[in-house]
Image (cartoon, rainbow, N blue to C red):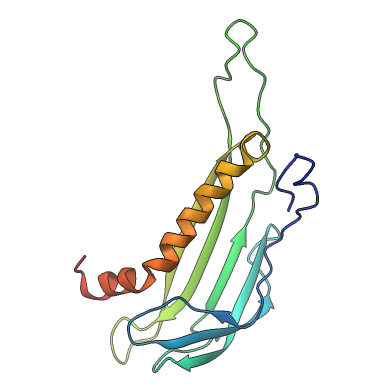
Amino acid sequence: MYFGRNADERDTIVSYALTSPVTGAAQTGLTSPTYTVALDSAPDSNGKQYAVTALGGTQTGVTASSVSSPFTVTFVKPKVFKALGKANPTTGLISNVPRNIFNLNTRHGVIPLAGQPSTNMIIRTIIEVPAGADTADAANVRAALSLHFGVAAQVSSGIGDTIVSGVM
């Protein structure tokens, strides 16, 4: 994936590639969680998916990916990138700025009630980038992503506690 047009950014080619094992963020009841991942087939050609094949650390009751209880993480890019339109010749403004939409999705089978089959829990992060911002304002696009994922990592345990207890 190409993320810049500045001379110093042309050499920065980054793709979604996980290094296994992935170190998990802090969660109550999980001690030093790690996830061994393997490249998997994504649901569509514009995505890249990894499946959790093994667990590390203390994760009592947690399961790796299986057919009936998947544990996957998928990054999806737009099939066709949208370009920025032309500016109005009179005002110089662009009236409609299209967005390129990226998704980071995690799916894991969870048991809704003892004795019941697992059903998928789905976590979706949707990233809508205004067309053109990747070249005109790459630093601020990166800063927004940095904050977003930094906050998610920092408060991972609190988010987990809130989802389990309902108390924020």
